[in-house]
Structures are given as C-alpha cells and as structure tokens.
Amino acid sequence: MNMLNSTHRTWRRCSTSLVYAIAVTALFLGIVGTAQAETDAGYGRLITTRAIAINPRTHKVYAVDEGADRVVVTNERTGATHTIKVGMSPIALAVNPRTNRIYVVNANSNSVTVIDGKEDAVIATIKIRAGSNPYVVAADPATNKIYVANTYSDALIVIDGATNTVSRFKTGSADGIIIDPHTNTIFLMTYEDPDIRIVNASTGAMTKVNVGTHLWGMAFNPVTRTLYLGHTGTNNIVELNVQTHAVHIVPVGSIPCSVAVNPRTQMLYAVNYGSQTVSVINLKLNEVVATLPVGSHPQDVAVDEIHNRIYVANVHGNSITAINGATNKIIGAYRTGKNPYALAIDPAAQKVFTANFGEPAITTVNVAQDAAR
Image 1 (tube, helix red, strand yellow):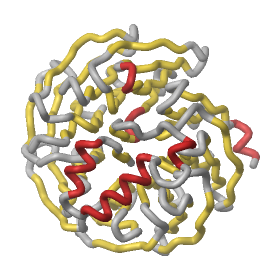
Image 2 (image 1 turned 180 degrees about the horizontal axis):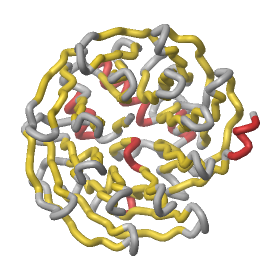
Image 3 (image 1 turned 90 degrees about the horizontal axis):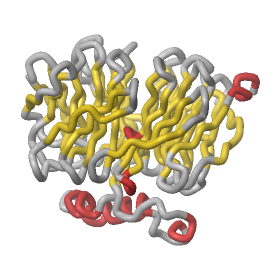
C-alpha cells in the first residue's frame, strides 16, 4: 500500500472530488485537530510504502531518506548502518535478491539509481523523461525486469536488469504496482482512474477492469488469484478475481489505505486510517470477523506468514502494533522512530523494520517474543 502527501498530487486528485480529496488529504497530512502538534509526517512529501525493502540473502535492509537524498542501509546481523547518496527526493525502492541490485526511484531527479548490494555502491543512474515524476517501483527476479510507474506519464518504464536499457509500455500513470511472477503479469492502480490495468509483461497487452475511483492500497493473493484494493471513497475492500474479473465488496472502516494478505490462512488485513483500526477479513467467508483498535493513524500493514503475526505502522503514534493472527488479538505495541510509514519483515530473524519520516530513518524491532504470545 502506499499513500500520498505531495501538494501537486493533492491538487491533481482534487479534480475528481474536491471535497473528499481535501478531507482525506488533510488526514494524511496530519493537519486536522491536534494531529499537527503530534507529528511532522506531512510537509509536502510523497508517501509510499515501497520506501523500505529487505534482501534476505545479504541480510541488509534498505530505506529511502527522501529529505537527505540518500538511502540508509542496515545490516540485520551486525546492526551497522551506513548511507548511500542517490538522486533528488528518493521515494521508493525495490530489491532484486537474485542479482543483489537495489533500484531507487528519485522523484525530483526523474531517475532511477542502481545500487550494487555487494559493495552498496551506485553503479548506474537511469534517466526517465523529464516531468514524468516516477513514483513506485517493483522488481521481478524471475525475468530480471524492473518496472517503474510514473505520476505524470502515460508509460510504465521497463528496465532490463542485465543491461539497464529502458523500454516502455503505454499503460497510463500509476500509483500502485504488483507483479505476479508466476504468470508474468503486472497489475496497476491509479487513485483517479476507475480501471485496474492487467498487463502482460511479455507483450505489453493490457486489459482494463472497472472497479471505481479513489482506490488506495493493493495486495495480491496468489492462491486464489485475487486482487484486494482499499476503496477510500466508499470504505470498502474491493476483491477482484483477475481471471474472471468478478468483483466482490466487503465493507470495512473509514479510509482503508493499506491491505495485506496471508495466503496460508486466507485472511486479509485492512488498515483503516480514519477509524484507527484494522479490519480482519476471512477470505473463505468474505466477511469481517474482527475489528481491532491500533495506534494513531495507521498507515501500513505487513504479514509474517510463518509465525502468523501481523504488524501495523502507526504514523502518528510513533509505534507499530502487533497482532496474533491465530486469535485476532492485539499482542502489544513497540516504539519506533518518528512517524513510521512503511514496513518490512524478516520472518527468519523475527525482526520488523520501519521506514520513518523522522530520525532514525530505519527502526529495527526485535519481535521474537511474539511467537509465544
């Protein structure tokens, strides 16, 4: 899932629904009521939960530090941290664990920085057309292709990881991207566009399915081949079968902004930014089976499939909330750095990592004790 705070993106989206966009953006920016006093989270930055990623082979965690134009790297095993200078306003990144390459989207430089994970050194800078405003990135290790979606461009950028050459699919702009490596398929979502785009990654052929505007947050269930989308305008989760294009709606809380699925248990977790809750959806029943209170303005959710634990980043609470997936009970909360907004989990190490707006850029949380709770 991802969320946005940029002024120019706000006005772009207001053209669709002025009153709703202003209300939602105010919440995301933290400028309603007492929230401004609690946080510096929104001061014109783009927000996406693609801001942090782990390479499980090297046990390194990478997070963007947009304000400092750098990526912060933490070694899970040693705890050592260092930084890598990249382009202007790095907003998102993706790791290809097979090649040990990290791809960083620099929004204000209209570029992608390529990092060699062995030395943590920049080995290439790939330019994107000026004014495109690259926003999210995803890597497909199976094909060694990297996909970059842009806010102000009609194209999806395709980078060949072997040569760093660039090609384009004319798909329109996108805020969200998911890859299904088993079928070599790309799913694209845009807040203002009512159509989910299903793209053949081999040919660029595209199918559109209308599910309504004001979508934010997307997850994919490879078992049932279903996309789950947070519909912030109607406070629903939209379930889209990508094979049959059948659509099912599940009502949840206010402003569902992030979703995560546990394919092992067939449970879905929807973060409700406005309600400050998590809706637990049994996908076999297609209904909410629990609604759990979490911290102040939850922004992201991630699932540890192995231990059946769920973690929620509370951007205004400076914390993450832990949930036992077997009992649907809150385990407790952990303190983080200031304004955590994106999560990454290493189930083997039983650690959760947050990308934060404030210092430090990465927080490491040892959650090993959760296994017994």
